[in-house]
Image (cartoon, rainbow, N blue to C red):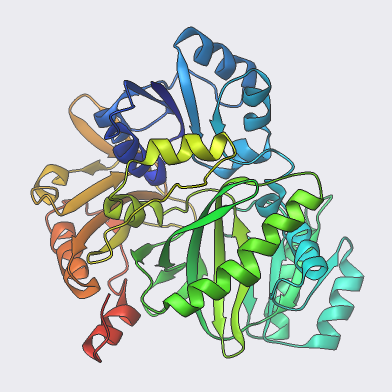
Length: 427
């Protein structure tokens, strides 16, 4: 079977690694891809993924039997709808179902209707009512853009002044809608479920590190690192998440005539009252895919095909529960603001000398035999270990072999899990 993977980031490199291992995969195309995905198949930078007719024609001309959509924008734009209408299997939700990620307000309304535990909230389309609500509720409080914002449209405001500045900044754009919600307390975790429109199977957990600097300081980013499994998500918590968050979401989406097929990525806050939904993503996370895929012990392709066909009965995806994975994102100086492109990266092969280390590429490009930085989040250096502590040590040892003076990374990825292991926990 020929497979087309859509995307160009570290998530897509990790997915390319997993997809290419399947005995069912004859050829893997990645559009547009990056130098890392090229190692596992054939990049097609000439294929404009925003041109759905062109993607459909490419699939027909190249005998593509499965399209896997990595990033959120093509899902929200309806790529799965257009491919499915042409009889091409495409993994991911329809445009309507992708509203779970594409609109914070849509998801909040669904939670209210189906009793899904989440933060108290209100939606606003105008500045003055939003400011009035802020004055009523006070701080700390969370301000979110309603639509896609690449993980950076959220402000956790410690003061009313910070919240007001965030609200005014968002409403500076015409046609804005925002969500203001209570600031929940607890520890965050990421929970992933594979869905076929009716059924869902839990496929893994992770913890992301959103803030740009050590100690969870600085602005939010698309993610500066992650580890898996999330040791704080016990089997009992996982069952609660499936019963009170994932299952009612699928029921609600079916009732609305937009059954959800694909990956439901639930961002959770583990509160004293139990797990609550922060928000949904409707695809594999980035950098979470970079710690899930190296731990995957099953063939990914049959599970994705079964989801596309609406029948996950009897399907399971097995992960190595005895090994942890940890990834550290190396970003270009200035990220998440303006970055300088074109600096040379050396030492990636040396970093990958161990079979327990993977350097997943994101914002990179090649120029001859040189690897150049070409974005904000550039590399995700991932390592496996018998514990999070061991995986952490291997990841940072690999980073030490990479020669890229213009890059930086956090030095505390996995700190909470390591602290729990030291205190007597484990994976």
